[in-house]
Every structure is written in C-alpha cells, then in structure tokens.
Image (tube, rainbow, N blue to C red; front, top):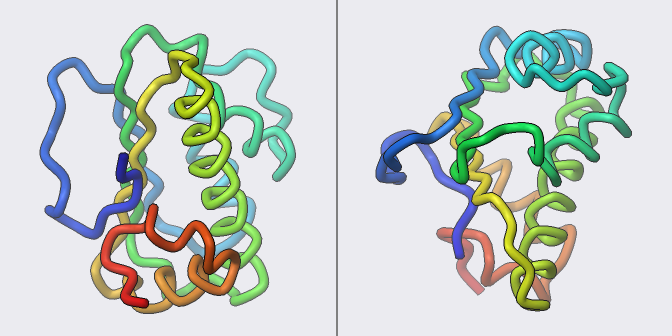
Length: 139
C-alpha cells in the first residue's frame, strides 16, 4: 500500500478526511495546521503528539485520511527532516499493523512535486529496507 504521493499522483477516495498543511514555514506552522484541522481533543501541539495522532486517527469517522502539503521550500532543513521522519515512522507503523492483520485507516501524504527529490532521498536514507514502500524510489 502506497502512502506517499506528489501532486495529482493520488486518486481521490469517497468520504475521505482532508487536512491541508499550507504555508509551511516552521514547526509551529505545521503543528498549528494540524491542531486546527484534526479536531483531536488530546493533541499536545508538539512533535510527539503529532506522531501519535498521524499514526492513529481513531477519532475520525472516515477510513481515508489525506494530508496535503504546500511546498516546503521555506522550512529549515532540521525541522523538515524531523517532520519527514515522523511521517516515515507513521507509514512504517501503519504498514506493520496491516501486516499483523489489524484494521487501520489509510493515511496518504501528498506533497508538492518540487519536494519530491528531497523527500524520496531522505526517506531512502532512513531505511533502504523499507524503500520499496515509497512510491518512485529507484534502487
């Protein structure tokens, strides 16, 4: 199951919950975008809380979650890498649950095509073993 897409590579699903992460300039802008749109009562507005929430979404009734990102070119590299690592870990966690036969919500992350090379290279660097789970990675 693929969870990473760039622009229009992803087909829309019926009855999906959409989160738009726009104006990405800082950790705070990312956290605030999620806080305003996730409607999660226990979201602690920090990286750990974000990691928990994007690996769960149990409070949302829809089975499909799509998180659409604006370009990340104004985001500092260290913040971008932390955020991407949280997404990578979420994808790996959800895939592990699926392999164990558990029912999970499908969470898709959509990024701007301009960020594709950076994201693919960074994800590949996180784990060569799991690189086949990322759309477009070439071995």
